Amino acid sequence: MHLRTVWLSATLACVAALSSSPVLAAGDFEFSGRAQADYSNIDTPGGATNVWSGSGAANLMITDPGLNVQFNFLNDSYNAAPKNQDYWGYGGDLYWRDYAGAFGANITVHALANGGSGDDLSYGLFGEAYLLRQLTLRLKAGHVSNNIDANYADAGMVGYPSDNLALSLDLDYGKLQHGSKELREAAFAAEYLPVQQVPISVSIGYGFADLSQLNKNMNILSVGLKVYFGGQGKTGSLRDRQRNGAVSWDGAPSNTIVGLQLPPQ
Image 1 (cartoon, rainbow, N blue to C red):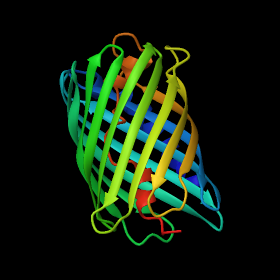
Image 2 (cartoon, rainbow, N blue to C red; image 1 turned 90 degrees about the vertical axis):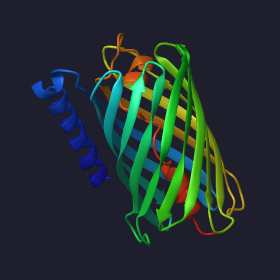
Image 3 (cartoon, helix red, strand yellow; image 1 turned 30 degrees about the horizontal axis):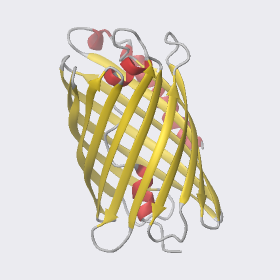
């Protein structure tokens, strides 16, 4: 918990400092970011697993519309008897964004901190299409190498019943290239921004996962808190911040990589 707190505090400090920088405030440059904390309860064989997560992103828009560069990090702490496991990830995105959507590439290093057999490297492409004011469609796919050899593919959509309410449905799939291990997951989440002038949102979600080497399916309940920095667009609504600020639909899902490394039960 201490390391995750340090990472999150450092990201908040960097975001605040860079967003007030006169260099980034000038010209076409625009800085945005987010910091997020989540709790999940996973119903796994043999008992429940509690997951505490901290993540953040810092995005630099070079031109509008045009090129963006983003840095990401995450830390998941899996608490399950008889031992805990920390999972880290850090990487970045290079992508193009305009009024119609976003398209780019992601590369991320993934590490199991306690007793892992090595780091993994994931790389792939991602895209979002802002088809309607009330609808975003999303796709991403790529490969995971080094410690495991796997492919992942994900599809999703986000609907906006109102400017400050986002309802998302995501479908995740991962499979080892050599072997029969595969993961399928469907997740639904609702995110709400109570006050546009205070860019802090709350979320709740439910996921259903099928992991081939386990003898039962997994139910996942989650709650989260997210702070947005910059990227407010014209109104500062949740929809504008998700479409103008740091992207969240980019790399390989951490739960897919961790799930594919679980031993058979």
